[in-house]
Length: 325
Image (cartoon, rainbow, N blue to C red; front, side, top):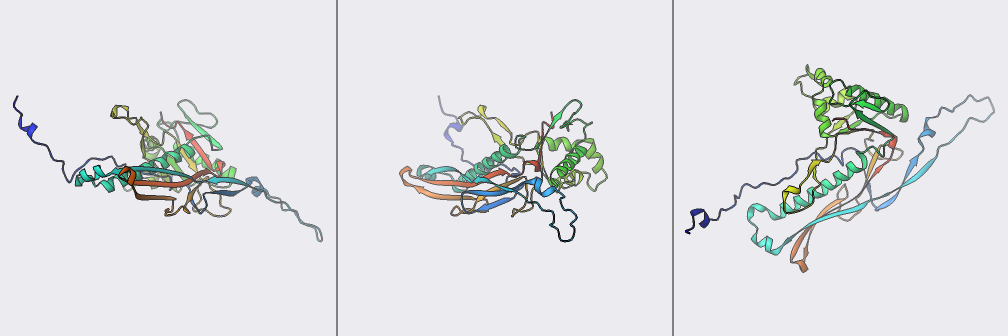
């Protein structure tokens, strides 16, 4: 059988076009709670007892007598910045045969960086975007809500604006702090964009579009964040049939007070301790390095991050679960 023309011609790859799935995600792990730079990997921080600061104990004093007195208590808690790392090796054969459009150094650096950022984002969600650590836990329901329940926000009869303002007031009554940040899963944001309460309140604005800034103003918080990272929880195999994609952040919301910046005697729902004392690290305790692995005849591109995410004040967070169906 004679070869057809296509068998005798090897198509060259385009030099100005390639397809790679570099996530255009809104990562929020370094945007919600203050980042505390630490020089030493582990240590302690002080925790003040909240109740001691909310008593009105001053009393009238008669001449020549003692004033009323009291005191406050403090305890300590531990932090330890675990070191996370991930690498890709570029062997000499790959480098020698790589076409120019692969930009082999840049692509592998991007691959390592994205893996590290996605890992950090997933850990943030696992630590904070769950009900367990928070004092107030609210559940979305399809029926008539009872205590610590709200009607799911994809129901047009629900009241998301009133719900957030009510639980903001509850937090303020409990702690003296009013929450200033709201983190929404992407599905929850979509439900709010289509909700009659929001549509009715923005229809006369300049563009009639619900922006995050406008949503924050309606809900009484300083900022609304919608993390959009996607994770593949399927096993790594040759077949894409095993891939399993989902949003890192589910159908829930976190309402919290976040201190504008870390400091002594500053309360915040959470802090991230970033090990900046690690040689060559950035402000988040991260670094990318390249070095030779001669025994593998390869160059290694390696990413590292050293951090610890801690819930500092559980009563400064309210978690809303299953907010949409």
